Image (cartoon, rainbow, N blue to C red; front, side, top):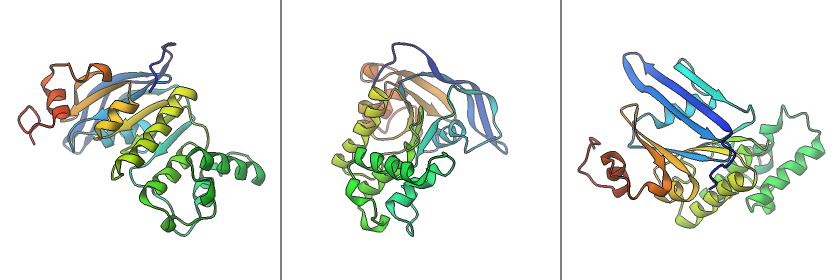
Length: 240
């Protein structure tokens, strides 16, 4: 993880609200993410995390408030690998390059470079069902960053992975922020992912931010919402 020193705004959200019929799932959300930072969106299931990520990534519309992304170069790593089983690993990744203007040779080089980055250079022609779940996640990650995005959205990137595979994915995320200065937004329940990849977090409940702060303060902050979430206690303000 990398805390930005330039304080150049990458994402700015002001008074964001979203409703489905009479149900308000996001209620006046506001936060800022600076270039090179990663922010974790945390909270119990059904609190609005995924809806917020979909809106930020452009997959959801029909909201109130203002969202400003300072770059159009964005990538999305889905919770489930979302690979097409009838296409090879290389073909799955290269789909993201269809509007890139690159010729076939440059596309092939770009795909090979990203596969090397995630340690799967020997699986260029493999099919998704020949890979483990962790390897499929790494392919999905390579596809998300194939266009060298300046902002990357992660939806539960380590869900369902063993601790070793999770560490590999977290290391990739840190590499992007530390060396590529990309901005990250990660929805996750995993404490390891929160602590190892994020600089700060917002905690949602009933569509509102009930806590926000730096990860380095997460164990000492007395806020009852973050204490219940981090400590995993049944008793607390979350209605479990």
